[in-house]
Length: 224
Image 1 (cartoon, one colour):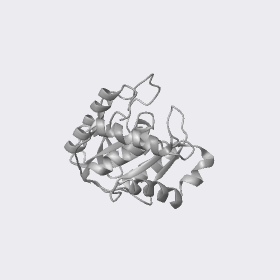
Image 2: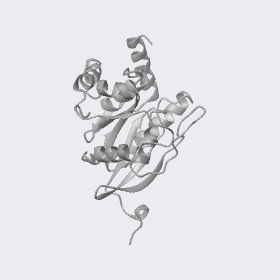
Image 3: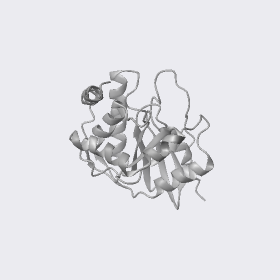
Image 4: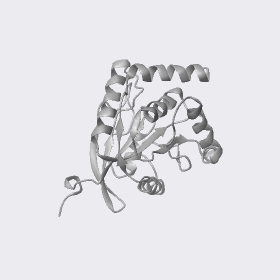
């Protein structure tokens, strides 16, 4: 009988976002055992992979570095290259954005991730979205159509085709501690990921200069 790590996965699960938004914690909720904790300056410096069972299939979890890293332009360029190479070589994938709003407000860096990827994807499955580290009293405000429509309109008003982004089903995750999510939350995360259909992925032109320009644009737009 094959061990899980030896079996061939049906697709990859890839989370896209910035450092500190909780990508590794979500992957661990799916059955992974990635490092998820305090980092002095920068986030995950590379990528790592693990095969796990999800529902009735075996999937490959890929833990990637966050993009807008405090290490500077060279680090961000390396991280974008890792992301682009991973997306273009993974075959079929399940893709998810991970963002961490502050009192409901999405940061310029998180908007830049959404715009950069959605603008440059030429092949993609429908992409899910995790909204993480949400205060308990803010969950009812964020888990509603009005909030999703506001975010989508902000992207569309700034030239983003949101056809690949799931418009009605986002996973809103409450604030969690370093030890991760409760068993009920893990079950909900697994159910959410398993509800999506994998597809081939193709992305080009993830260039750090353009990414930084997009971040600066949203900072000016939001007055940050």
